[in-house]
Image (cartoon, rainbow, N blue to C red; front, side, top):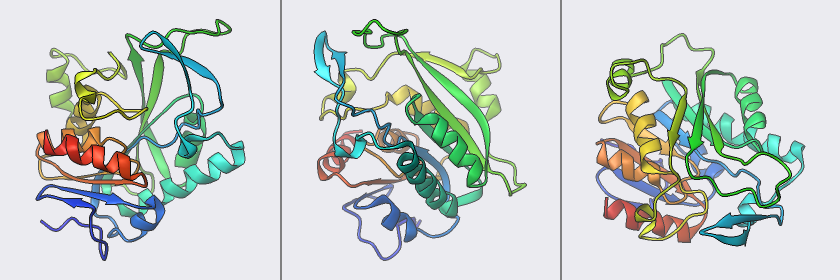
Length: 258
């Protein structure tokens, strides 16, 4: 099955996986229109504001890199609309997009989705059982992230949702929109660390809910490619894009050992 980004050589390639090193916007522009079944995106949260947090019992900086540097709301929103618009072009009529975020970016993303012609289906609340403690003690401890699930609004094609499977995984009861679990385990970081790496169980549920075997999954900000690891294990095709060579090599190591 040919699922490559056209006219561009992958940084890493197998029968089921392609990793691309480069600019997300440029690479998405070369991707075939309406060729992707599902997108999972974990875009910059713009958290890098020189603050502090707790990690493994130690006080550390919240700064993650230049890619996560905080800008004005106008600049952040323009960025979010641009990449969401690019994703919409490559998404199939019945495909869906999942976007993870925090209070720092999720409201802009929700607005951008509607402005770019998406219909939001759910806002999943991921409740973390072991969040970092609140060192400043000036507000409630941040223990959740939001994952928005959306489809193209102008298309009447019904999105894929494996409802019965989700019900089975939830003990025979309808699955609700609050998902509870721990942060990414040390075992899942054995090949290297990424500052916003998501746990496998989260992507397993997302991919199982909205794709079938053989479908194509795209992650435009792939980081350490938890999406790709799970896609491989669940027999889906995967395209990952990142502009950081260190993270692309981390993705490569994780996928090779999946």
